[in-house]
Length: 454
Ligand SMILES: Cc1ncc(COP(=O)(O)O)c(C=O)c1O
Image 1 (cartoon, protein in one colour):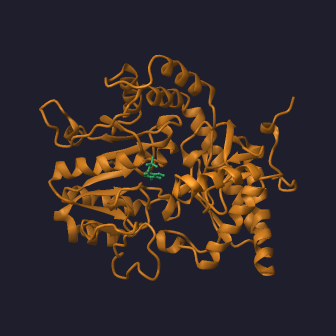
Image 2 (tube, rainbow, N blue to C red):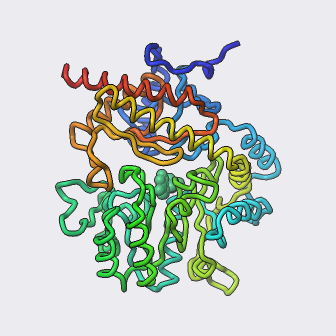
Image 3 (tube, helix red, strand yellow):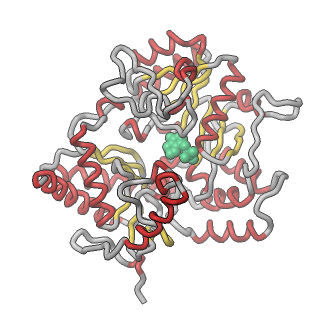
């Protein structure tokens, strides 16, 4: 018997028969949650479809529509949905007790597994989210250096801590000229946060050196993602990597490499691909097998800031659910399947997608481009060269086009983020990739016709 999962989304088919049940759920949610949503990052207008269940690369929504999932819960579900080995590990572990106020063996197993993947990962500390891991890394750097401030890259996303949100959505009207201006993200962010956050433009070695030197005596850390999604998902240049590594080392600034997303690029994560020697690395997403997780790992002497054996640690860090055995089991089951063959499969599909889109855009005369690496991609609705946050920043017209395109893709059964970025999962096939190329090209054509008709 065929199931909804067998359906390969086709641009020709009218895929969405109904959205009535999702709409009804959203109306209920509006009564009990601000804006009807719990995650700002997954909301889009008029409301997202509500997921009923998922298997592999597909989700089925509550109205029975099949969705080919290129978000994989924001790049975390690297084996797609309901991965059998992960589900079995979760069930077996939960049956023995879901969480304890005591450590468990599987926490040591997962720590050993991750630390064995890179010599940089000397010791590790788990948390419940990537955001929390970033906060822990910053606190460890502050304690280690005795300095209060941090530096971050303009436009880069690192979770929801006040300091790391600075300049996340700066725009031409306020982003400053000589040096990026510190712009608050959430209304009500204290002014002191801006005083303790230095913003550095991506891929500009001279500016990075200048700003790090100007603020060096106050800087505890530089927070750096070498493939920052919101900056355009373009890789850091070798010159930029060399500049920030040499300068942070010379000035005694802890280099925190945020691999919460880009750890999925290779067995040892992203830093070896960029020839980058981090002091600390933050992890999350794929290391939890689909359950909430974060981790900070790296140099033993800095990680010692968390050591509770002398009495009060330099950085006290706990968490009721931290390193709970169910999350640890899911993470271990998921990572054990991520062998070199799995990375080759994922990265090969990523290459196929980027090449396919580049060729198709050129053949169809569409002014668009695709960036990314490995199993990560982002489509930009313009042909300007993207090297940093400012060059990738969409115009108002391009933003509107992104919105129309997102609506089109969801209607055709393809889920990407609203700015057309995505991540591949191991159950995906070449046919899935080719389907996205086709539907993306059709979507650009449709969006252009819609605009002309408006
Ligand atoms: C690079 C990066 N850092 C940190 C985070 C925060 O992780 P979490 O959502 O688990 O708090 C994210 C989340 O998308 C991220 O992309």
